[in-house]
Length: 402
View (tube, rainbow, N blue to C red):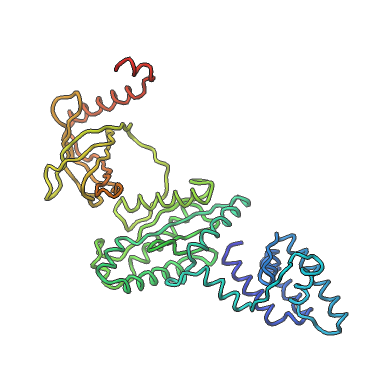
């Protein structure tokens, strides 16, 4: 049972409590009819709505039938139709004694208060608090019934640029429009929430990774086609979103790791150029990677000969520290020496990932090698192999070298 189905049950139950609760036969028939459509979850929702008590389905159903018996007894004793809620409260006060200090509240007021704590004011989607509660429940359900559960995290591309260009009011309007596109593209059983800022979460019960990707990319395309105010002024020449997909039991076993893996996939979508959906895949590095501390020189467009520090090196790419954030997909020329080797290595690299390093104004740049002379490839391969072999030696052997 999904949260949207819970909401429909609550609506049916609320209607019965407001319209039929003083008519025993009609009320019981109404509850039984709803139970035929939705199952025994109806009894849980009924008791929670009326007296704010939580029970398992079996226990809730048992209490309901006992309350009905008590209700019929009260009606006979008073020779008038007692309201179901009066019988329910009396049952939990004097017979079951689950309630000690009851507080009476109008159902409409209660529902309004509940919505205010669960609904995001700006987008009218569920808020993070509701999402956090829902993902725990959906993970438990998926694990209990061995069904798939996928999570998609969306993020607006270059949203700061959009706000700076058009103002925050236009930014808010764009977020509301985006929320509507997501909500109108998914099923009723799916849970859509504003995850925070310009980030949205989509929880997809009974959906595998392939199905989640299809849904997520359908949303991405719908956003791409939609007309947003001044969207052509965006760096991507349109208002766009990126998304990351992760699936329970495939990528994660808990709600927290599911969120983490979806977030990592979203990061990959951004790093690959934005306006796309990425699936979380366990990192399988094609080349062996070693840690280094080599000073090199970087040339990119108007900046020539800037000093960089290579921290990570492989035959296929590298990680270096630089004082500027480079745009994803930027091609740079890089020159650096290899300790113990004559001359320098020259290559062209393509930026794949950018990460700000603390508050010092420096950035970690992940780049792949796109062009290198065969001789330099051979020298770098030998260097990486020798450094990897050295790191693999036992500590006792390493101490004899010093």
